[in-house]
Length: 95
Image (tube, rainbow, N blue to C red; front, side, top):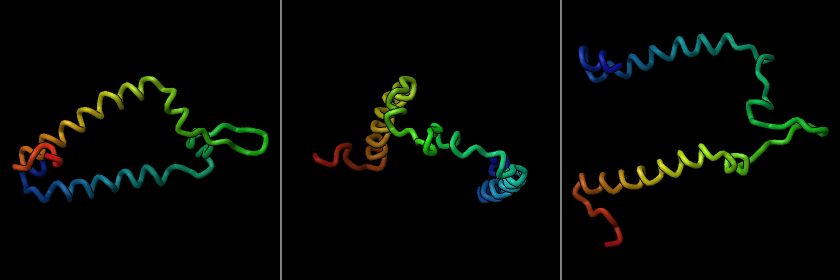
């Protein structure tokens, strides 16, 4: 997509993205509904009365995910401050 934007025009990126949707839709059309395990796709446990969906507490037990979230949150917050500075606004709206 970058090459299309560089060599043709900036609008060619969107045409390339639209063209890349076609093979994705073709690949999705080959998936049969009976091949999809809906309980597994939703991280649900099969119990006697049906299925039980595990919630946010299961995510909270994942230490790798919590570490990633803890590292990415300050980065996101600092980027927002820099964008305000680049645009000529104050870094902190309270001051």
